[in-house]
Image 1 (cartoon, one colour):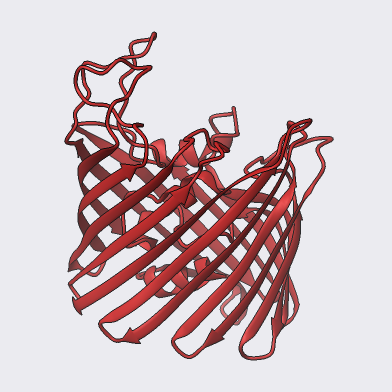
Image 2 (cartoon, rainbow, N blue to C red):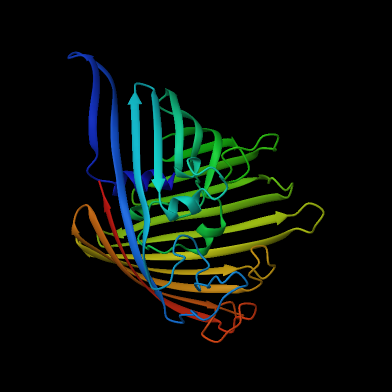
Length: 358
């Protein structure tokens, strides 16, 4: 899975401790890692005099985790523990802050909202791994933890696709270059779903030297008895030591109970340039088509995000970011608009984020 490769590549400085009954008997290995991130966002349209009936302001932000305006915000404080003992492993991944709450939006319990991931795994052979619990979705290029993304703000495909799955899955190694994952899970993003029909998950992966591709699927009934199916393709390619590309494309088809089938789709390209170990930048271009109003945009959107990655230390990332969102129809606000009648087709934002990880 892409998330596994990104995690192995980007998380540095683990803290490792071996538990022993005596000096010669090893009882497993525990690795602890974590991060803290904070950000400031300013939307140049600044619709501060626009409010809904409850007095809430719009932020001109239709994607996850950066819902603020002219405010310094804590993204998330996270702590992850990975335990391995022979063929058995377990992971508990906790997050605290607005980012974790939005990620676990389906959970009403405040304690459960802090559980980003929690799962146990068993590997009967080196080619088979069985996992049960809650884990981040395999669909898409972007992930929850900000130090694993090149852009700090999130894309539309991440924000309206699945976040997590709770269920059981099996990963199979098919030779040196191919892999297959199949699984059964609760409806998307639900940690608990008694009596609900289960969803089917699948992923086929291929890796060749500096190129990787992942064909992903998730589908089944939701808790309202509608049927959703999502297919996605994610690919990464390293052109040179200083230049790489990423691609994400997906289509989600949804048929509400008693209604007609509709779909939305999107496509994004990530251009990554790294002149040195301490400086790089990423240009993300994304197109989202929701003209059939599955997400309720009822329009198409193009967004371009330029993010600089500055690393004064190997465990610190500073991200100045400029973002432009442009829709075919007015969905953004400016000063003087009424809440029910946005008048702008485009809006621009500046963001400054800081992430430290260990």
